[in-house]
Image (cartoon, rainbow, N blue to C red):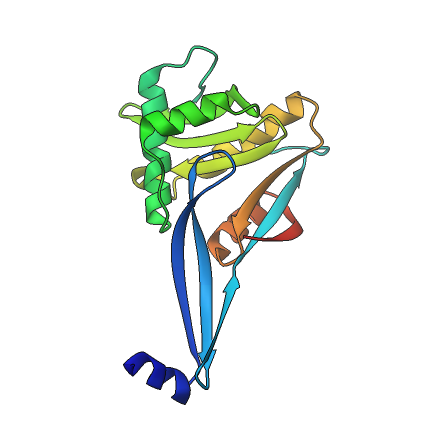
Length: 204
């Protein structure tokens, strides 16, 4: 009752999140907002931006920080790398307010997806394990990009994305796409710095 009184006296804008499964069985976080004024409430779904990198020009070479190497998951994956990849992804999901499925569920769903190619999983690895991952679909789409908190702001994410661009250019793709939430301005700036442009605004 106290909340309804606030709604009648001043506009109110609230965000809330809800965990759902995406088309590939993986967890993601949906964001919604509530705008209320004069006792009424309106709920609207947030939007996702599709961004694209044109691969027909010169692509910057990836540069990893000292002590970090780049590996592909490959057809016979090392399970220590797979679990390290999941750990980095899980940290990214929870930090963003969402959640990742438990390891067995995630790995089973990933391997069964027709878009999955282990050669399109690029990992940044240091002496202590996986510090970054870029998992892509065969349709030249970046499904997930995540960097471990201990390796943030070191150039790992940029190097992974540039490696992804080179990988798809070598497969004769003309562009690479990804999706990011409209409210994530830091991500937009990062992808624009890589030469990516906005091509679509889609309901989340």
